[in-house]
Image 1 (cartoon, rainbow, N blue to C red):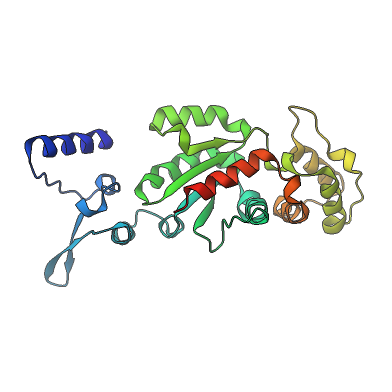
Image 2 (image 1 turned 90 degrees about the horizontal axis):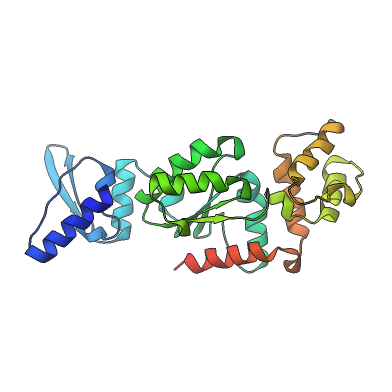
Length: 257
């Protein structure tokens, strides 16, 4: 509705040579496509003041004043929403760096953890309501099990399919080399496991198998997936990284200025 309203205003102002002023307290009608059309009215002491938004940096300041967008989304050129902490903290930054692409940390590409599979449905909707208010590009990267959710959200929230990238595998652990997982279990948990125990057939979840082995040895720790992910990702060569993920990192790089 807001997009249609803006489109109508722009058509009318151009066609009829009109200047249209829209006064609002809502961040939803801040025009992020053309920052220079925004003016901020505010009270400073006993004076009413006006600030003209001249560019994207001014727009970021306005959005901060309104308390609309988290800092992670304001000071990055691109934001990538990922399903969990393993992707954010461990494997994505490490694998991308091996390809000469800097994401996460202090780079200009921010990684935001949606909150894991159990909270994905609710949290993703919240983030996608916030994302359009940030003057930055964004991409949502999810595992294959989220295909129905993505289709539902695209239809419900009228979000372009280009904002989403669905991976072909069930979980990020499905991209690990089994031999390196076995090494990680020995180094981190002091468990001897044959690498073939981590092999999976189509439709199986490696994450589930990895957890079952740790459960059987009473070795489950908080953030175990992140620890294993860091170990495995740091020891994988560029040639070991799945081509699907290589294409994803190149896509992210192409989104940066």
